Length: 188
Ligand SMILES: Cc1cc2nc3c(=O)[nH]c(=O)nc-3n(C[C@H](O)[C@H](O)[C@H](O)COP(=O)(O)O)c2cc1C
Image (tube, rainbow, N blue to C red; front, side):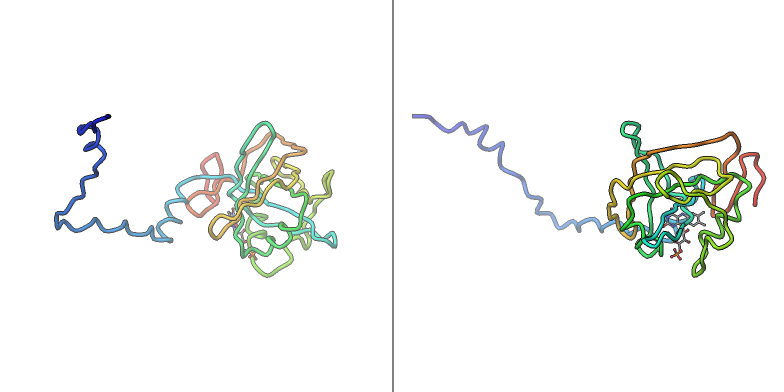
């Protein structure tokens, strides 16, 4: 007969705290405006995310959420607000372009973030190898195939595989504290 080993048996009993101590209150949710201001302490470059619609018309949106993700395969990501007008085109697109703005191109950044207008009207662009709109004069450009669109809160994470990349020497447009900056320290 195998006798119970009391020591081990008792080890498995969980002690329940019966004291009348009130449970710690759940942490207060982060205030959205405070969250936004805190995120603005992180400097980024500025890109214009571009895509063609089914009729071949170009669309674009200023995006600072660009990040490189993987070297092999070469993947990048951009986070896009579900409500952005470009979103419906991105959901159907096979290819996208990412244009990294130079420090002289802050007006393009403002233009491609304005609501309710044809952002490409009067703006030069050339089609990349896969048709995606490329903006002349940028510091770098990526021509990409859409890899995955992952919903994340009120944004979607667009992960894309880089098919072709170009860059030149120069200084980037920097976005920091909700304003444009240059790497030489001057402020726009
Ligand atoms: C510097 C800057 C960076 C931005 N970055 C993003 C971004 O990463 N993702 C995003 O969804 N919107 C971003 N926006 C906002 C969009 O450019 C745009 O204003 C927004 O999509 C509203 O336009 P729409 O709904 O008419 O497309 C940024 C705006 C600015 C000025």
